[in-house]
Length: 226
Image (cartoon, rainbow, N blue to C red; front, side):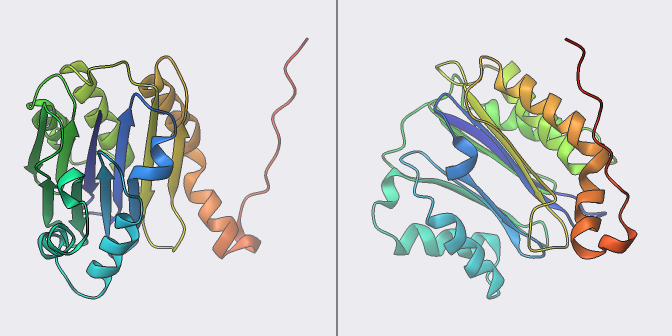
């Protein structure tokens, strides 16, 4: 009951993930990324331990396909898991275990891979990939948002989605973007709104961490009247 997409920006080296589901708190369980290494999705009877494990495998030199094969072959209960990975070179891989409930699917594109389970159509990942590929000049976060919205417009999940999350890494060990909507009637619209608010400030938050002397001084907005 989840659909999601991983993507890479060839221009900036950014790696990211976007995910949505009808359960609460999807961002805390399903998406993982590490700058210069890759990004990972783990869903359907989700095991969040697989995210860091797959990133460690890629950090030690395995490609995304090799890391996914290792996880599928070497972890217990793999028949219940749906996984995807993209590495820093843009190579992608996905795995859907035999016990993953339909409809499910996967689709690969240029610097992206989409997966989904318990969705209305197995073609939803392909719709996400097409949206992601539509304008490579866009910032990665915008392309990820467009992809997840395309998945919803193509049919989405069987139940109404309730949570969504966006994760992007670039150079630092901490995320460039980590936005989550955990319980909302329209979480994808809310996530897009959060990104629109955060986008102008994302680089400055990095600057405050690595070069605080050169960062802009934050001025709090005036309180709302009434």
